[in-house]
Image (cartoon, rainbow, N blue to C red; front, top):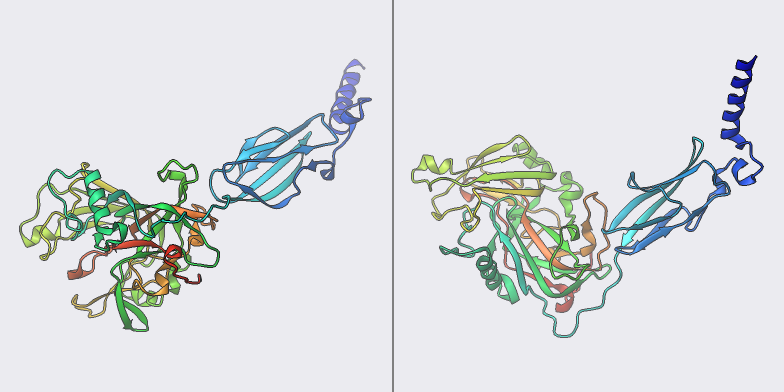
Length: 428
C-alpha cells in the first residue's frame, strides 16, 4: 500500500507541475496562452538603425516554469525576457522569441530591417573624382606591371601612388586589373550620396562594342563593383562594411542576350558566388613558345586548373612583381564566360556586353555605365540601403582566355560622383 501512495503522490506532483503547480499563488498555477505574452513591439516588419540598440521587451502573466529564448537568423542570442541587440550590417534579419512553459512553446516572429541613418550632402568644394588609392593588386595579365609601370624596388605604397597618378583627380589615364580577381580600392574626399531613384556614380573603363548576332559585343571585360560606407568614420573600409553591386548576371545569367551562344560554344556560363583561384609564381620567365603556353599555373575551387599563357606582344612578367608571396589567391563572385570565338578558327574573339551593373562593360557616356548604390546586396543576397559610399572596389569578374587576345582583364580610367557633376540618370 505504501508503494501505491508514493506512486500516486508522484503522479499528482507531475500533473501539478505541468498544469497548476498545486500552489495558492495564481501566478504559479496559471497555464499560459500565446496571447498572454505582451511584447513592447508588435510582431511583423520592423526597422531599426545599424549600430544602435534594438530592444524588445516581453511580459507574461505566468512566471513559474517559464523560459525565454531569442534568435537572430536562427542563432540563439539571449535567454532573458528582453532582447537588447545591435545589428552591425544592413539587411533583413529573422528575429524570433520562443516562450516555453513546461514544454509548451509559443513563438513570436519579426522581420527586422537594419538601415543606416541619413547623411548630409557633401560640403562645397568636394571633388567628383578619386582622391586616394588604398590598395591595388592586379591578377595575372599581359598589362600587369605596365599599367601602371612597375620599377624594381617599388613597394605596395609606391604602386598605390602610381595608380592614383593615373586615375585619380580626373587624370583619366588607365590601369589594368589583370585577369580574374585583380582589384583596386579607391576613396574620395566625401561620401557619395545615395539619391533615391538615381544612379550615383560611374566607373570609367575602355569598353567598346557593336551589334552582332542580336547582342552587343567586341571588347567588354566586366569588373565586379563593391561599395563601402564608412559607418564608424575611421577612414578605411572595414571588412563588415563591404557590399557587392548586383548586376544583371547576378540576378539571371540566362537573360544575357549572348547566353545561348556562349553555352553552345562550350563556355562555363555559371555564376559562382564562392569562387576562388590561386596562381603560382613562375620560377623563371619563359623563352620558348612551348614554355609560354605553360607560363603561370592556376587552380580554382571548382575542379579546374591550367596555365596562363604568355603572348608575343607583351614580354614583361605577368605576375605582380611587388607581391612578395609566391602564390596569389583571389576570392569573390565569378561571372559567366562572355568571350566567344565567332570565327571558329581562333582568329575572331568577341567579348559580349552584360546588360548592366559592371565596370568596363559599357561605353563611358551611356547611361548603363552609371551605378545605383541601391543595387548593393549583402552576403545573403538581400538589398542593403546604404546612405552613401566612401570607398569603391573593382575586381575583374571573368576568368577566361580568349586566344590571341589573351585574358579577360578589366581596365579602369576613373570613378566619378554623378551628383556632384550634375549628371542625372534614372535608375532601373
